Length: 431
Ligand SMILES: Cc1ncc(COP(=O)(O)O)c(C=O)c1O
Image 1 (tube, rainbow, N blue to C red):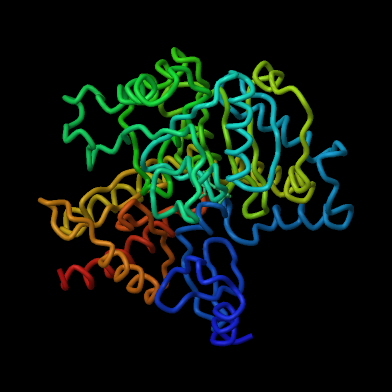
Image 2: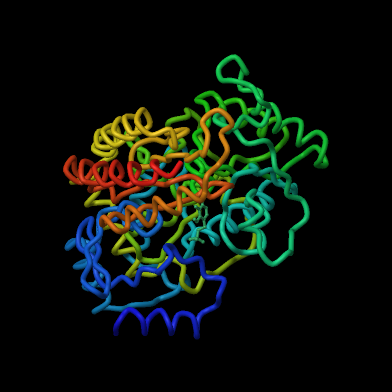
């Protein structure tokens, strides 16, 4: 089908509330490795991986073969029947997860994993209130939108009571107008203030992403989580670590983002990169906490055997050719290239992130830090025209999110940096 027909049908038969990238949305046809092709045959280097999901590249032969093999046996079982792939995946995840997290509940999306985590925390603690962060993103159910701190992602108007938002650790735009490290990570203390002044004084959970994804790859100071997790435990709560974006080696060196910050979660959620694009999510916890959920529960699509086969293959491929060490190495190259661009282009206010999760905050003026979503839109068109796909995020829509598949090589990084250099040169001229 030609591009215009696809775009017309999209407009006629799908909700107008779909967020579509680019002035003329991109209709993709196929992909291989780090490249995707649109229906007109144009090739793009994919540095957003379907929202940090295509962990080991498109059409990876090992992932495809394993999924096909399972499709030929049985596609769907539901959580009512134990399946070999599902129990093997849970065993593998117990092996790579931090701390005492060793038991899983599989669902179909990041939203459901966060919902499950909050439900478990309430059951396990007997408390009802939850603290989240102001630039957080948790998904699109009513609960997940209430946990989300960015108002533009809370559509529909409904809010669930009992959820409070603490100040965000966001050094580039410090909510307390202080500077790290002389601030003493004062933002972390706000979690205690929020618990003491806006809740009953006992909470079920604090939920946070080790590096905020949709928020614009906001990276907290290294001490932040240690301080906050102590506060949370003191007030009876559990720490829910949302690894939906940071999981599976994305941040380099470790399998999970929280390991950079030296704390162990009580509950951990994961989705996106877990199965290279097959729908799957998981809520992990300790046997002790899982045991506190009395009653039984199901998930029709949770732990689908095809998704589980793809996930096992994805993790194997990561171990073989896209390990957390590899991500740290190519991520460092990407980071230093972006910092060089920052020296050249005043539009780049901040570069941050870890591994292959690097954010570039774009500002109209470095002094005032005025966000420039307009320049980001222009950079989107300029990079697309040169054959590079990137992502965006941030409260103000002014952060470029760069997150290629973890199989990216030094050559891919060099190609992307070259395109970004030309795109910034074009756009900078107008500012
Ligand atoms: C950190 C985080 N949590 C949860 C979600 C929700 O995941 P899903 O879109 O699969 O429901 C997302 C999605 O972007 C996310 O980034």
